Length: 134
Image (cartoon, rainbow, N blue to C red; front, side):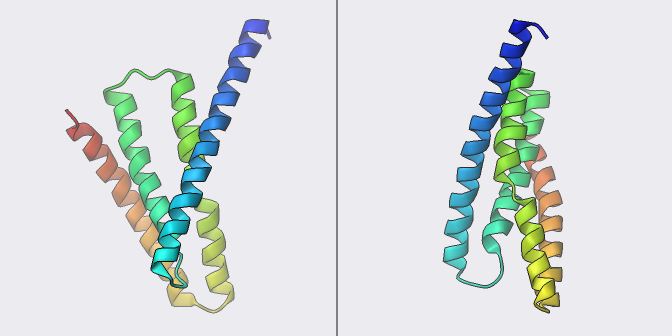
C-alpha cells in the first residue's frame, strides 16, 4: 500500500473513531435522561435511542442518496461512526435477555415488539421526512 493510501485509510479511521465517540456520548446522555425520567423497570432509554437511531438512519441515508453529495469518508463517519455508536442493539438484546431470565416474559415480548415495530416504522418515517425536505 502506498504512503498516500495508508494516510487516507488512517485519516478515515480517525474520523470514524471520533464520530463514534460522539455517537456513544450522545447515546449515553439520551438513554440516561430518558431512563431517569421514566423511572421504571422497562428500558425506555434504550427504546428512545434505538427509535431515534432508526429515524436518523432513514433520514440521513435518504439525504445522502438523494440530495447530498457525500464522500465515502463522510458516509463512513456518519453511518459507521456516529449512527453505529449511537444505536444500542446490543443493549437491547442484553436487556431483553435479562427480562427473559428473570421470568418477565410479557415485558420481554413487549420490548421486542415495540423496538422492532417502532424501528422499522421510524426508518420509513425518516426516509419520508428526508424526501419532504426542500
